[in-house]
Image (cartoon, rainbow, N blue to C red):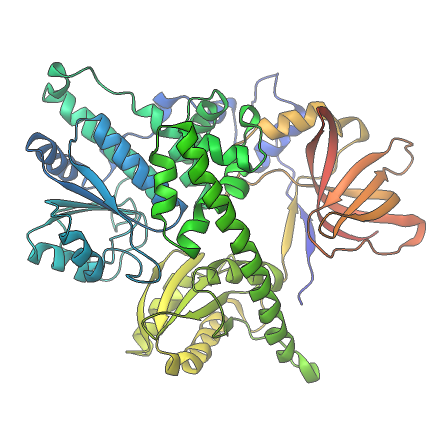
Length: 574
């Protein structure tokens, strides 16, 4: 396995930040390319204009016609957290704007596959819609759009995934990642695209005096808690525009201006709603929502986000929480199987391929994406994990590393080996695909060749980027509070990680095999609590018990007593 290396981010000028910004936080911001406090202003008037999105005018005209003529509208969303939140945003938003006949249909991972497939259109026909709106999918659903048109149904595609060589012949398309689209931020999640479309529709309806005969113009900001959840859960880069959306959503959640479903999911995950941060959405709420689409039906997740009663929301959230527990056990079993497979490749001094393809007939189709992600983190190379589907083919989830565009790699393989792949699509870092089991060995060879060409035969080990060291006086509640609320942190705007040498005063194993330590900095008598939530990690035995740690400074809130705590990301001898 490749080694993990700690590298410190280059020291830069701390920029022109307000005097109330802690000096360490100013250093962190500067290391992420920020130059002034202006880039920390997350007021809604700084949001990029919806007018910059290509296709937005045609889409709003279509939707305005649908509302004016009382069309039956059916939302078809993806079966992940981005799709579920996007579905809830679209439905709640359309209803706020005056749609009387808006409903949804969630594709099922195990029965209909991803996106607006002809099978989904066949199910949709039972609802007799006049307009289908896709959310977080549809940009590669050419045959599905054709099937809808053949049934007399108009289609509005909203998506953020990369398009294929040919766009679907939809009645309107909104996607910031279309070639030549002028929207400056290419990182909107599917839920973000849905929110932008609703803002544009509201402006269009305002010009038509639509709200004059109604109760007034709705405040779409009430949907931002859902936008924040979907954006964080989909792990899209948090550029300034996305940070603004997430920050606004988090403010609403903390102030208890949020959907009952989000309130319930936070409660069951043990998070303090008044102190919620982006990582709580990503690591606590998002997985519980995703569990529905992975194991059963994402309609369970959508319903949790659509109900207006706290009691109903809590009941739905309990179902999602139980599914997430089942998902975790399935994932643990699959990971054990995968490690046995991969260790067998290391026998007799052999080395792992540059790109890993793994498959087992017993694996769960809904969990292979998480498995691929875990193995990618462990072995620091692109991974594709496969499971069998009801259709008798293999469904794979790919996860990549920096510097290797996995969706483009699949496109190259499809071009060089016609007929090898079924459907595929995705992003630079994650993709999905299908193929016949008889093509697995050939695909494995082709994938390894693509990775070797892109990254070399032995991909580099993982790198933990550190924001430098912390003086003893900085390791305390004050800075921990500043860091916790200084985000939102996430993909592309990473949470601060520091490194330094500490002396281990004591070490013990707690909980599910977690390493807990008491530390002190050399030359100091002050003890600091630390914990590593990576099961099975051990502290190496070293001279003077000195350890080199990469860590995050966090707060331990135990029975109402708050104290600083180091969350260990990596541990090595000093």
